[in-house]
Image (spheres, helix red, strand yellow):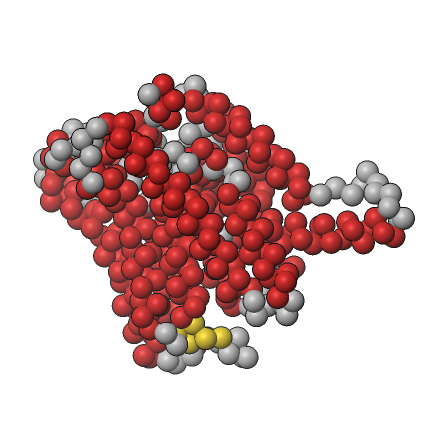
Amino acid sequence: NILLNNLIKWDNIYFTKLFNFDKEKDIIFEHEYVFGPLWWRLINFLKIKSFYKNFIIALMITNLCHFSSSIILYELTFTCFKSLNPLQKRVKNLSLISSLFFIISPAGIFLTTTYSESFCSLLSFTSLYLREISLKYNFDKSYEIKKIFPYFLSGTFASIAVLTRSNTLLLGILYLFDLINNFFYYKNLNNARWSLLTGFQVFISFSALNVIPYFQFCPERTLWCANKIPSLLLFAQSNYWNTGFLKYWTLNNIPNFLFCLPTIIVIINSLFYFTYKYPCLIKIKVILIISTIYLFLNLFFWHVQIINRISTFLPISYWYMADLFITENTNKLLSINEKKGKPTINDFNFSKSFIYYSVIWITVQTGLYGMFLPPA
């Protein structure tokens, strides 16, 4: 129990409380509705009466989701890059190393305790994978939907992800991207209809997150019910967590920016790397767009330190680190051979340095988390 109690910190206090509600009407505070709405309902649905047994089951599910996410990421990576690189062995290595970088990501303890991030990553990667296997790419860099069922199912997983974490609403850009391409550029009206229908699932989930609380609390809660956009989700983020444009850019938050600086650098590098230096096709263009918008929102509107843990729903940084790891170590071997086995001090290896950072950071982060200290 002492060990388990040390894991019940920060948002986990809310999650464990919600896991054990007998009835949803017993929820006292309205902002509790925005804590992984589907995630805690999934655990609560099991109706396990013992507090600690419930928590252990949630831990097991979280870690199973984390493990499953790494497998889906492997398949997603291989599917995306197998046509970009004729060397099958390199693509397999890229897929494996991407999954390993995901496992040791700076999210650390938050992927193994009962936060919603692992469940969300699994849903997001599955959505991306199903969409990818449903598309056929042509030589002129256009593409079309060839497998309707997995494509539509990808939207289902994306919509479930939205009910788990609201930041995955950005996955809706996948289908907006497809809709624009199919309707305006490829003139494929049948594919455009499927893009619209598939993306509409994401819209329904986001609407549910706002409509259900509205009918439950309004018009009594005039603080947000009377707003132009009467959204409990937006109100809770602004009122209880003070999110908004540049609201987090204060002197006292400088340590939080420093905590997540390595992750920010990796994401920025990955965006430039795949945009300008890597011969990528349209396959990952939409993921680059989503990642760019996500980074902008996280830096300027949200609590910046959460980038360490919620970035796990996008694969771009893991692809970057994996590709860099393969390239750097290949170049290093060539360099050592040219220097007759004598590496020099200039042979800096960014990817390997990031591995050292991740291992050290996860250890420090776990200690800070156990002591109820930021970042969270």
